[in-house]
Amino acid sequence: MSENLLDDALSRISRFAEQADVAQEVIDSLMQPRATKTASLPVRMDSGATEYFTGFRCHYNNQLGPTKGGIRFHPNVTLEEVQALALWMTIKCAVMDLPYGGGKGGIIVDPKKLSPMELERLSRAYVRAMADFIGPQTDIPAPDVYTNARIMGWMMDEYEAIHRVKAPGVITGKPVRLGGSLGRDDATGRGAYLCTLALARKQDLTPQDTSVAIQGFGNGGYHAARLLQKAGFKIVAISDSRGGIYSSEGFDVESVYQEKQRSKQVKAVYCNASVCEQVDHDAISNEELLELDVDILIPAALEGVIHRGNATKIRARHLVEIANGPVEADADEILEEKGCIVVPDVLANAGGVTVSYFEWVQNRQGYSWDAETVQERLSERMERAFEDIWEQSRQHNTGLRAAAYILALKRLGEAVEAHGTRNYFNS
Ligand code: NAD
Image (cartoon, rainbow, N blue to C red):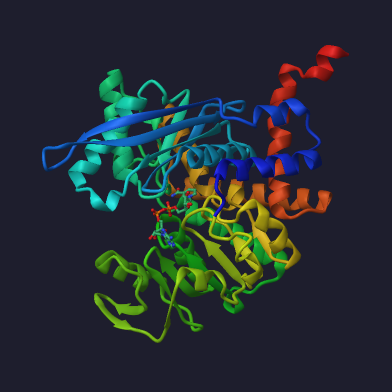
């Protein structure tokens, strides 16, 4: 994996800047985050002892609106990772034409080692530290790896207690009863599913003849797998942090999910009501999953899993990136040379931030939309963004990642130009 994820993310900005043909000021504005806060979070553990966790929040760029991005709980969180993720959020929000800049947050912690009450105290400690750094008009967090709706609810509650206001728009991905949006729980997976359908149409893939491997069976991976299987795609491989399963016949996604809820492991089962039976399969590692000969590979776990060291071994014809940054910058070219079409993270996983935006709009309106409206509007946005990027890729004769960055840089460029650049002031 790359030593410094932020350098990796910045190298793509530099690479695509020329093709985007935007003013140098635009590129300069993206070369460093606007502000990053690091905080030590004291948490009373169940044992009575106080432990200190490190938390980060980054406002990368707010040219297009308040910063927006998830909060990750993971032992490998670093400052640079949070900054890179915030830069990708900047690009993603611009790609989706949302009135947001990019932000991100994280805590260095293994949440599996905390009790539910310790987790609540940690979530609240994070908001106490960041209470003046986040806000409905300035920076709006959401869930990410190992954070969920319940945690968002605790965080909103803490923010409201500190500021003595009701402010549901401070955070998205909340439980529906606490101001969350219908359709937010599966929005990331649904967005990836919609991108996969659009890709299949462009590439003349018939779902029944299309094999899909999914690395990571959490919020994003599970819902994408579920919807794709419903549409007829064959889900031949699934994995989580403990390893994976493969069957050329394909798995019943709901059965595997039901079993994972029960045993916390991905197991090859078919369930009839609550009775589950094992089905034929091969146990595979996460590395093996990535190298399977499949039509579509969906990395939906963590960043940097495809890199210079293994890119030549990737046999999938298409990649749909649910994870943020699963492919390192120096593997882009290798995949391109192999003819692998990559639907990039800044588009493929943008369903989450899009419905988060809908949630924020509903919170500001004080009016909630029904699930059908949310899904319709998500489909419209995803299909439009996919078409825009496809069109850019034709115009510039580039892959979809370059096309997405070109589109985002142009939109950010319009905001910078609106204030005036060197050309304007010197003419
Ligand atoms: P999650 O916590 O719900 O699930 C993560 C999954 O990845 C789990 O199944 C876990 O077991 C698995 N995993 C962890 N380490 C792994 C490893 N080394 N190898 C294989 N699997 C591993 O997280 P999520 O919300 O589904 O997020 C997954 C990815 O999608 C992240 O990169 C995240 O940034 C991105 N993403 C999520 C959202 C969202 O709304 N949830 C939105 C945009 C992007």
